[in-house]
Amino acid sequence: MVINCKEIAEKIITETKEKITELKNSGIYPKLAVVMVGDGDASKIYVRNKTEACKKAGIETEEYIYNENISQEELIRSIENLNSDPSITGILVQLPLPKHIDETEICKTISPSKDVDVFNPQNFGGFILGDKSLIPCTAYGIIKILEYKKISLSGKNCVVIGRSNIVGKPTALLLTNRDATVTLCHSKTKDLKDFCKNADIIVSATGVPKLITKDMVKSGAVVIDVGINRDENGKICGDVDFKNVEPICSYITPVPGGVGPVTVAMLTNNTADLAYFTLLNDKNIKRKF
Ligand code: GUN
Image 1 (cartoon, protein in one colour):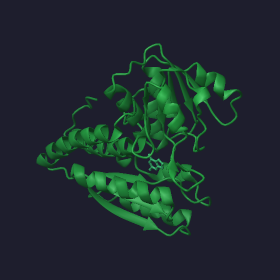
Image 2: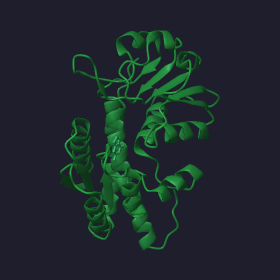
Image 3: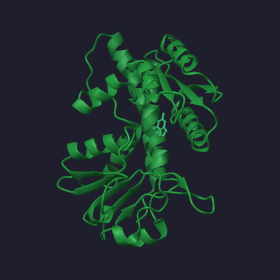
Image 4: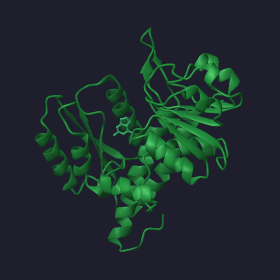
């Protein structure tokens, strides 16, 4: 069965809108600064979708689009200005950045109190330690999809393919925390098929078109496809050979229109939650979640 992820994304955005209304009634007007460098295909689509989702949720956005030749110092200065701008409650720096820019340095620059993506090492560390911090958008979105379909995780064998800081590592952690047995595979994994064949749930985030083929998937498995790639005809496709895998699994997410819209919806949720934390801090109330 193909999971209707657009429906899940809409539900999350509706819930966010309610939080935003509450915040506005308390005098907080969340505003997200969206920083993009260059005009990469995927980044442009993501930024457009994020801006639209924020609008639906009642979050104001401001775009900061820079030429791909911007220096690291200039980009850092721009983020520092956003850090100290009291009208900005959240900052999103769209990745990837051009090769001459050190992404870690940029992530370190984003103020932890405005870091909607959990990119700042202080926030990411808090997340790993289980401190009640925000959760990275895509990993959280994957959990929301599984919860929505009431797919139990306890004792399940999960294979996560891809070890990025944005997707693979946080997803493996969230699944582990929910009592799944997780194997984190990557480009150097030997015999990927053997790991996948034994999995109740496969999460693929590799950027390799049609890496996951029918012979790698156990009958009745759940397949979550995080890839956004182009096939040999230039058409958007995921990491999974959807046409041949779909008939044998119990649930599968499509590409496009799968994990992507849910990630975007989780961004609106995180923007609302960060603004809410600020409200609690202002009132000197301890965080409840
Ligand atoms: N690039 C790919 N995924 C993401 C994401 O979730 N957030 C940001 N900022 N950049 C990305």
